[in-house]
Length: 371
Image (cartoon, rainbow, N blue to C red; front, top):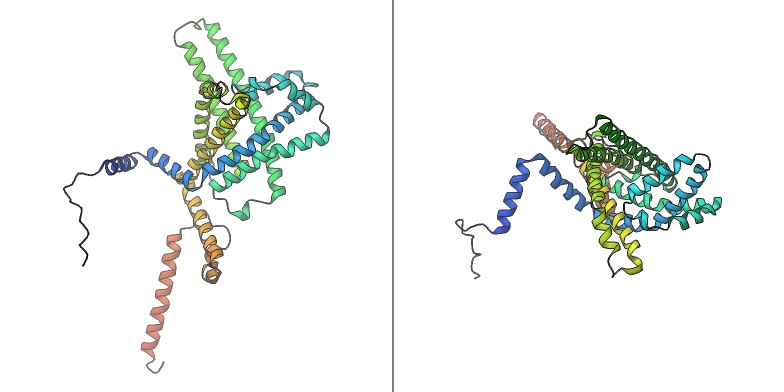
């Protein structure tokens, strides 16, 4: 006879891990913001966002130079008619790639783009859309978009092209507006004669950072809304875009440290620029998916996303066990309604079964000769 399992002494002091878990749970219970942040990382992990961002990084690196060449090809066409457009475009690229843009041989890229034929430009366009295609699939996974609503390859490529044009327009407008606001702020401080007052330079920088966050929020919102096509409330997507924008601005402030250490590392040697691009694209992809995870776990969108994920799990179960298709067919057909309460459905089914049973009992009571 085996000895009984030892029981834990109730007077024993909890372990360090248990105490940390208890404090973490208490912090989540006290702070709605902390609880939302925890649910964001849980959803990020459950959706395998790190793997998805890795795929987006791979295609992003392959698409980077075709997109830059495409930009220069379009820039050459536009500048011949509007010379003043060159500076905003270059500023936009510098804004997205702080510290990296100076390391690129832009003259060689521009020369190759200028000599590209129409077929070459179409090739740039097709290969450059690979990054947006991978990012689109990643966002649709985070938002649990039903597979029937993701569209086919042709619609996806058209969507990627529209998003690419929209992102370019947003970047140009944001850089132009940021430069304009910064210039006006500096001119206003000079006109008032308070430019040398302590704290004014910090205030001007703060205005620039705020404008940058607003423009980046618009950038990520366009990515979420047009690329992911999540059919979620605007407020949820705006909150996620704001979180990603704040992270992106912090990343740009740390760009000198992050990229400088990568480019200056002698181990990487001639591959330093490629490694730096990989690091930067990876950070951008992770921030994008983290902001999407925040949007997917907001109170306004959490129920919809959870229902979609449950529906997808049921469909996967039915696919693995075809013999239960008949039992699960009503549950898995079509796209879930955003406000469907699965608990209410189960309760309704239980009440219906109880009503049928009660009717059978009453019928047998009323007719003793039956059965």
